[in-house]
Image 1 (cartoon, one colour):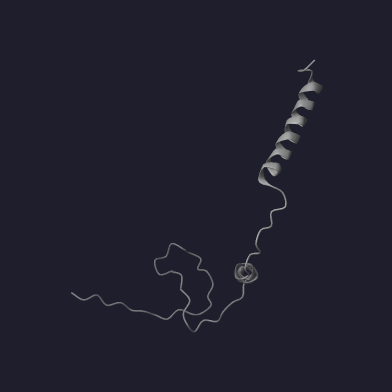
Image 2: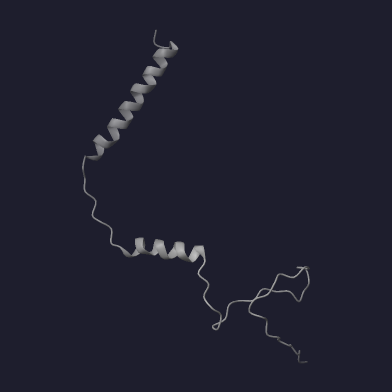
Length: 91
């Protein structure tokens, strides 16, 4: 029992059909002879690729880790103490 399938070539550019539920309507994948279309997404990927190709510079330690952690925590604690003092919790 052989099933005969008729394949018709699709046009390269076509408009969307009015009835998308029609079983004859289907999207067409790009073939080898299709031209490349430079879209904004392709341009963005091209620009981002330059970051992936460059080698990262070695990190330089400016301050030790305990100091970089202590200063923000102490400043935050001081600000919270000031807020609670203004609200009257420490009076």
